[in-house]
Image (cartoon, rainbow, N blue to C red; front, side, top):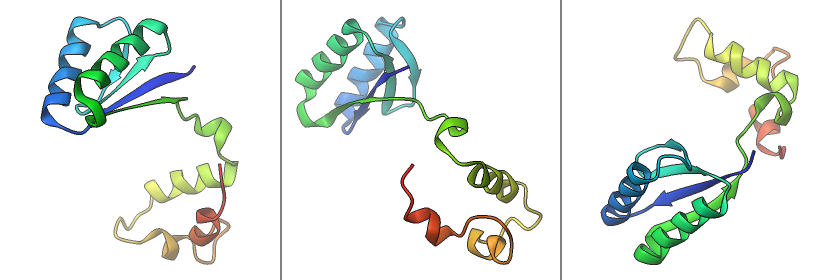
Length: 114
């Protein structure tokens, strides 16, 4: 499911986005304050472009796909994220946590594309 990500960079544009989301609830998938996800329809695109025309560079529109970690990530990376989130010592950095284990090394992960 593709969606439109609309991000605002000024108070006026945020107000416009808030008003857009309140007046046109159907195309709004989710709202995050200064950003919103709109469904991938011509009407949602019309609303987003209209907002961008009103506020210029203070509105960015991207077409994106929601992240599904079960499709995009290899099993070891997901398992490492779960294990790290549930670690006993919350102050342990990931590199120290992963050292000497089967969990992926942070430097290796930094170089790998999804």
